[in-house]
Image (cartoon, rainbow, N blue to C red; front, side, top):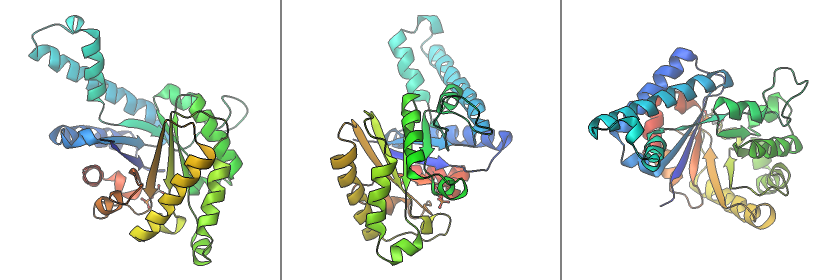
Length: 282
Ligand code: PGA
């Protein structure tokens, strides 16, 4: 069974203590729901300054689990066969860490920016690119988003490329054409993705509590799959579609049930670890 991908986007929220508590609590809840969580791949995208610390905390957690295993098996860590060790390490990871954005150059005179390479070195495995808040407040267009996705991919980060129309475009019934264009222009050409993730996030739904109907999400997910598979990503080994916009623990299950939706991108509700876990278990 394909795992569902549940991504938390913390935006510009949290601090060292809060992130630490959130991670510990998530590990505890995940251990309680271990079997159900085998169907979930969770990713947390905190503000960049927290990435390294969270990565270290997850590493400590892995070591603790290896120690526990060696105690129970009455052996030393050195005696655990390498294959088994790799398996324990992989299973002990409660979630992967992602960045909320990245620059498209590896280094240079770009004050205030972080490159995909830097984020990857810090411990990130994913990078959101083209979020509507970046498009709006940092004037990032489709071409820039495409360059960021390419740089993420080249630096071992799986890009999560966001697309979404505003209220006006939808009221004028131009949403399908708009998303078609965003997809064609935001997904870089000539890149052989292992995994391509597209997040459909209608701007009118982000942070508003307004969620599109199941039919509206279904219509868009179908378009995204058709366009992406036929026009831009024949070479992706795996293609994943997320829905994002006012997802919470009450509506998650229903959205996950929609055809062609493989997971969720969660903003506000992801700051509350209990809610986020409920969403993962939906
Ligand atoms: P929201 O945000 O869940 O708070 O609506 C989603 C997002 O912007 O990724």
